Length: 603
Image (tube, rainbow, N blue to C red):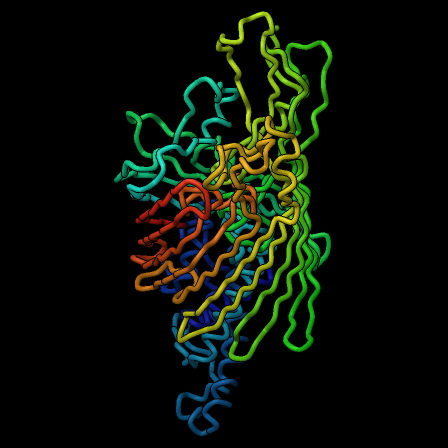
């Protein structure tokens, strides 16, 4: 460190040309205890100031000055030699005073040598490199490290969407469409003797203002492990939406834990995720709404390839609990019943292809097995004896939108002591008539068009492999479907007289075609994207609990088209709109059009 200080003081003296030649040491030796007179040398004055403040002793100051002058003399000689090489003319050097043979100057003489710019830059760079090296070693000023490691391990993100939504209902719609979402949420209702909750299907509703807010962070634990967390607005009763309506007397809005997961890279090509996560599968909103989050465990294995355009094969799998059932069911009975737990087991294979002109093609096939989601009829249930729960109540769905075929699951026993004319309460629950084993086949094609724009075409086909018409009447008249009946008959789908039956019109398959053109993800000013598509979804092609909640205002048994576009207003600010026009596939007439205008901000 001492040598480093001497060298740099000497270099600075040489560059500034303020080194006093041979007379300075003699003066230092001859001075008495009185304060020395100011020098024309700024560096000497600096050292004297340090002596006066007691930072260094006078002897140490003299030693520094002497050593600096020796370093300066060496630096002048080096600079003079460099000047000779650069000029390439020894006569020019002699004309400038004979730098190679300088006579000792008179006491107090100041000589200012010429320092080439290249030499100055070299000296400056060396000093800078030494200082940065020392700073990095001590950890107080390393480039790119303006904060502790734990701060740099956090990556925050978020978005806000303000939406104006208009819902339009056809005046020829049926006004007898049950609100099964409200029925499932409210618990047992007397759907036989009392009034049934109905959907609004004919009165238009305008100017619904809605909001969605999300704020999250990705946290790097180490090179292999990452943790994610996200908070979001929304309705906790709905797994498919983080949107809340702005109304209700200025009440505060709720904020929920939308995601929390840990992700680990077991190898360079294998990733494992556990917790509450984004949809880990390649899919569309025909099957899973974009806002839907998955609880459980998922894994992906990627196998890089290079064969006839095939770039990679990806294998995905997951195990997701849907409902563990009540641990103390029935609540008021001493004898408890174990209910079958509801799970989703999923697997998918995806192939990625690289095509000419930088085009890309993805092909994916997935199988999603929903276990124990089908409703089951209960054992005879004597509610009149004070029983509050029937044996299969826990097979009722946790959440419904609309479209899936439903049946009553309670076999209620009436009080035999009452006259037959007495109206007795029959609080019922509904359950899914069909099981669900969904095959999902998907293809996605992208092709660059111009600068930063692309054309995209996505096709998705879904089919419920567990759908069987024989399931409709397997529990007889008491377990028959209460919706998705056609025209004709006496209104009973499972009448014991086949000729009197109303036909069942449920469906098991669906598809979507979506085309888009423009910037893949518009964010900046002038960036844009336009899209158009068509969707068809039979009543029991997928679970209506999890698919898109905007088209036909959620659920299945719908078909129609949609158009939309997004325009960037400023960086991170967009304006978007969508028009969704949908009719029923079968059953009661129900045509719904939806206009959405979105102001989006992301960061």
